[in-house]
Length: 609
Image (cartoon, rainbow, N blue to C red; front, side, top):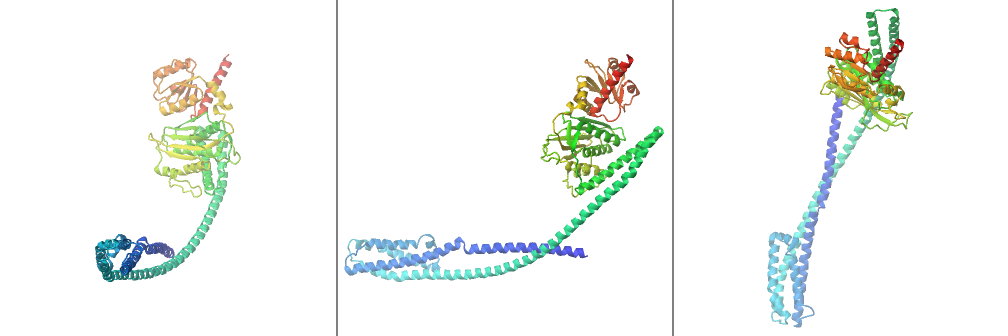
């Protein structure tokens, strides 16, 4: 109940803050708009028009007085004074025109409810009628001068009335402006009072929010500190449990190995194999839990050191396939022999990733095969370098593990595609995702990336990309452990008998990388190639017919060596094989097995001699 009240109070404070902020902004905008409205160009323009109309009307009145006085002086002297009568007349008319045109003329139409413009038109007409008399006076004819003066005297009241109307309208405008300013000032004052009250209220609310936020931050810091303590306690607990569980598990595994020396039958040996495999898997699972805890607490440290890349990869794949494969699922691999022979990386973590990925593929692959391809990646390596090797060049390699299983679920795909936060790992509900999450986290720590998708052909495909570091660029095929093997197999021919096209293609890639030519890979041997065949590899014999066996016998008679997979189905095939290839079909193991056959053949021939 207390928590509910607190949530309601927080919600009310948030809404009140939003309301006050909006009100504050609206009041500020209205105040600025009112200020600019009071000082707008249209207001200034109207004010200027009124001022111009007053000034022009006064100037017109003054000029009319001057013109009348000038005529009176002429009448008194009976001769033109210095100056020009037409000049004074034109000046008077120009003042009149200023009152009739432009903004001033438009405004005068409304003075005195239109009376001003009617008076102005009357004055204009009377002044235009005296133009002939002005011309007579200019020609020294003063006969109509007194009439002209009399007319101007009669116009003076009209001019005065016109000027008074303009002045009255200007005064009315001034009063109107003053009242408007007072109203605006009053509104502005009310608005400023409201603005100040709103600002004070907003300040108090924000101050309250700041205090609440500060308390929340302190509470969050305390919670974070508690979480860190819990994480440390969890890590310590897992380390302790790992140590405590490892000891009896090691004893179980060692005792099972000791029992092998007691002359057990095949059934008992199989039981011991199951005990050892289960114990080793449990040890790996405990190690995975410990590593996940270290990753969550940022305590996992990678150990970078130089390794023989090809041999270590072969070893990792062989161990993973042997421990994980309770079914007859074939494991194949291809390693690009152009990769560096010696590379710097964390071998134990790479072994852990390969083991978990192959183990995951076995879980979802009831039959078929699992292939692993290691090659250079097109991605660009980051600028990061291990602490002990700051100046070593880097290359990105790609490991692709593909299976023919049932594919991968959408939840696992979403987990692998979601942003990775190593500090707060969120494990998926699927129990099979634990190893994959660990693989992705380890790949991230190695400055690499793990992705996954399900191809249209079926199964799943995992792509691991990570950087390796190397002092030299000597490729694997030129290294000490491989160069002699490639040299001994160079330019020799091998036939591959395999029903699965993908498997046959991958085996051909292996053989070609070792220097062997593969003129033929098929599911049955219906004809023998023209070139000499040194080796035949039989991966699948379920489609063999009598013609195939006859051709195989011919090849053996011509000195061909036959290698066969341990899981071939026909006893007839096993009887003609020089050796049965047991275990995963690995890249260099194929070459070493062939080399071993050559060595045995050489020893047999020497003994026979």
